[in-house]
Length: 257
Ligand code: COA
Image 1: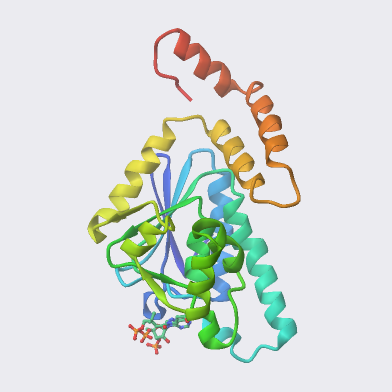
Image 2: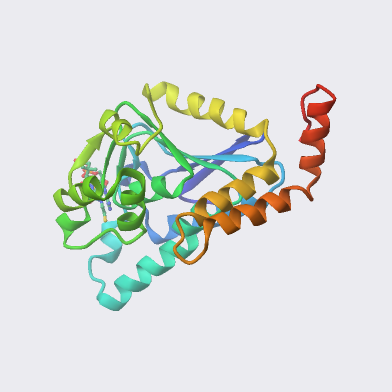
């Protein structure tokens, strides 16, 4: 597919998806959301890709939010539809992808930008990154899962404060609240995430896909996470990776997944 708003590169088994609207601080307009959906779908289906890094172009922004110019004249119905579609095709889609997604937060991650980073499986930030959910300053609330994922990641009280004040966390503050796992220098961010991704690629993709399902199940009120874990644990025993992993261990060699 020919993308206008994103770039995709691949090195070995690691794909990097870069949101590329720097003049608008990589704000998520409808077209970008659609392209991201297609890119994640493609990456999930492409067997040569095992880990995905998501970042923003240039050094100022990861994503400065949903594109405000696109929804400023929406009514309640259109607003609801915007949130529903975005959650379905991008935010929930990324969270439930079978391959690990690492958000490399290289600058402002505001509103939909922070919501997108929170949909990734984990996050690293550059020292200049700023994170917040400023929606109430616009008379609206986070609509791409922010009211749900932020309290789960940092606790209800701090999430309430961030949402109500519309304030921004520095990268160091975000690290203290466990919103991001690491903070590194700007130029180190992508190499650092690539190293993390490379570690992941040594492991079984099928087991990782099962782990994503089991962990996510624990945050889904409609299913029992322990039951999902049992199911996925059992499923692993039927995979070629399980045979290879256990055989390699017993033969005292590295597995070849
Ligand atoms: N939607 C649409 N356009 C956006 C945007 C967004 N969420 N965030 C930034 N932009 C655009 C600006 O309109 C500006 O475009 P222009 O040059 O055509 O006027 C361009 O990106 C640069 O942004 P600017 O505001 O001039 O940069 P800044 O350094 O002064 O401020 C921010 C940076 C991030 C503080 C500021 O852009 C901002 O507050 N953005 C909106 C954040 C937000 O509320 N997000 C939640 C949306 S629900």
